[in-house]
Amino acid sequence: MVKERAGAILRYGRGMTWRRRGSAFAAAVVASVVVSSGLFACSLLPGAPDSVSAAAATAKESLSGAPGVESVSAEVTLRDYRGEGSVSDPEAWVVRLTVNAAAGGRDLERAADEVVEALVEARPEAHIYAVIVAPRLAGDADAEILFDENVGAGGVAAERVTAARALAGVAGVSRVTVGRDDEPPRVEATGIDEWPTVAAGIRASPGFGVGAVQNPSLIAPLDSGDPLSGDGSEGLHLELGAVSPSASMIDEVIRLSEDRSVRSIWFSSGEGLLPAGGVAAERSSLAVDVDTSADAERVANRLAGLDDQRYWTQGSGRPSFQISSPIGNSADSSAIVGYVGLPLGSAEPDDLPAAPGVR
Image (cartoon, rainbow, N blue to C red):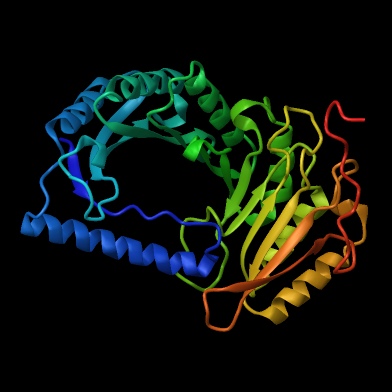
């Protein structure tokens, strides 16, 4: 049976703080429940068009019993109803397939190929995406592998499964997500204190820095005291490049995460534009969101005082930082910017390597 649901989709920008995101997430869940229950109870909205429901049913049936697949569910959801356009238009709906894979990753490659084929076949009739849930892919580490309707490129399925297997096999990893929004993989560890070991293991894993294993991010929720703080995807986010962050900078990020005034942390390696083995294409950066302007000054002064090259890697340049805090009770914020190991107010240092081909 294919489930149909009318719900709101809320997208967040990085400008929202961790605690604010938690409250917004809770509000979105409540709104979705109210909209879904109210609209169906009053019959104000029709179900999905027959072509969309048929595409969902066909995709579900084609995957049921496929090698490596334990079970499949399909859900048809109203994409973003705002009272504009017609909900009878297939473009207004999206199909989500949840494919539960066999534990241990048995035949996972074949299952992923079948999922991609099902998406390609359904694409002319419906917006569709799929998530493969792979329990205990390696040891106790679980994985989620996502594919959307634009996954037609050859080899994508195998590439993502290979990335998930490699990352899940790193000691200390508890969960891996590959393919979300076509962004680099997200990796969760059994504890933040495991990050130095996990980072070293990821960098040593097969294929690191290539394809789907380029710039994976270590993520974790922050203990903000808010029980609705979300899924951890933007509470603490550390992008792991080939050379940045250094081991000492990882330790510093962990120390910042233990500061109760810190709302969110985002470290970018600056290596997103480079092939494997290259040096940083851009300066790495650290963005920290804190409670008050006094907290911002304290954190900024600490980072400015880290005048030791252990906190960056030779040839990659000092990381920049931006420490943000709210202005009074408004939604606006102020920020202190600087460079690790340099006095506040310093000009940008000339310490980045030249781009390839530039002398």
